[in-house]
Image (cartoon, rainbow, N blue to C red; front, side):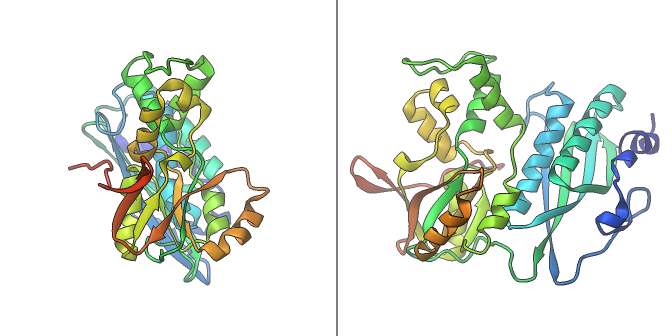
Length: 328
């Protein structure tokens, strides 16, 4: 099957009603022609997954579709944006129709879940590499940025941390776990951790909810400490984090010991939760808005004037390196 036949059969059908999403021209032309709503700004991000770097060989195609789109849309969530459009580039070793069929079916489900429309892309031959560029909208001047954090602001995170790293470890060890000596993970817990690795949950609704209150925001892709360091750099401040306050899932704590769980929560990466700061005087107002919100939000520390990161360890504040995943 050639490139154009592959696109027609497996991806053109992913287009939804163009009139509902501002698409004048979608898949099939040299470019998509898109309409940005009035009083909105377009936000754009791009992510790439490479076999052997971001996912294990022989990972099922449907898991890759969910992982790619979830990780990409998480960047929109961190800006407080509403997802709109997706462009996709696939580099494939060969045109395996079974693989492409599974991938496109899962991608269709994922685009409907996140209310984002595929409007174009490219395919080529080479080592398995998947790239998604996502586009979304924010009210003009209202995008959440990495800058804006000020001394006294609370540092908060959504959901639980460290789960994705545990899921990866369980796959690397082929089911052999680093078990807590007083407990062991159930099959249900193992599946939960692996799905947290395979299927990140972009916090779209949470990003929009916190936008009126937050002073800065980032999604956690390279590890909490590494990503928080980007906020500190852009805002020219420091932070004090209490590891005891980190939100850890029961599944993670059953999978490994307390020290490793805490380490993975701080540096494991790819949880795709939000890390954001909020002025202390806005915390009560945010809590009111969150009382009926299903995603938990936890305050884990505070912004300070002293540059760098500090962790509360053994009864005192200790400076630490902002360790996070680095590609090079």
